[in-house]
Image (cartoon, rainbow, N blue to C red; front, side, top):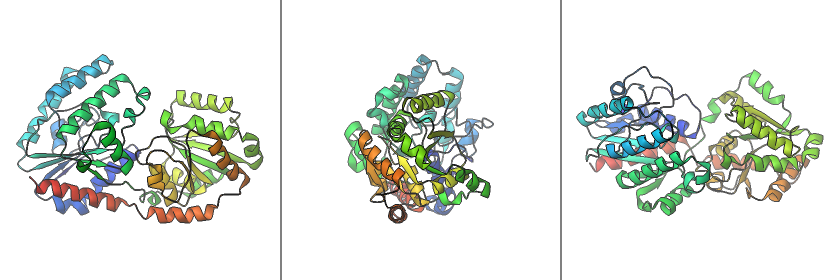
Length: 408
């Protein structure tokens, strides 16, 4: 039986990854796990609080935003709970008791159980508990371990809770999945996880074409004229200030050529104020537009209409927007950091995300419409995308499940 949420409502790499796995395992992959239970603890990103934890354990939606079931001993749960109490978050005894009460259905399960932890740190605040058992096999996917490289960008409570989880999973997990070879190497180098316990299974973006834009979406995207697109929330590692600063050096040429930069991705009022201040400080206020969150169909239209997708991030565990752009025929200018060269292959044009002169030279070619060969980049992008598919991702993951269950 496959257990997971019935609805995944928030767009993002982790959510799309979980959604694709869940759909596959509830469809084509279902027969491969007959006689076993597969759980995706911590997968839900919805806000449905209508069911009890025991109901979710048996396959319903559940209170996953608030009570997350993970395979860890009570002592670790207690440590995490104290961390969040110190941070001022709600760590009530009531939630703890409900989480503990939900352990019993797992322990009563009559079939071997496989748990696949997707390491979604957005919902790390409330941790359930399950004592280790030889009847359980645990798979843990690492998306990235950015906190090990840039701890200054994380709150202390988040850093401490991650360290606890890393330590626990290092000792308890039967197999680790990494979404890129880059991520695997960081797990080996920074966490000391044995390389032979880590399997690399890439993500994909071939579901993107299904979000067909309406005529209204296309007209809306076309109304921006010439533009570059950067679809990313303004987290520190996404390097928005670097991109805006570089473009600001060319603001006169951009204004003359009618070229602007469109920024998408969820933003708060504080984010907007920060980005506007950066734009003003760099003479880019007339060539930068902050669109915030847009629907899948509008994003599709924006990518199709963009001259280039620019991706200056200096740390990525995978870099799905790069593949999404290539899938839709948009050429990519990307940072040479993290996993991006691994994902973009020979189809993207790369730059150092800390060398502004290098990016300015590239952007100048875009503004002047010379030097870069868009058509050739688009064709290379289509070929590069053939290396990745959600089917390959799901089939490789299912093979890991079978191997682990076969050893029980």
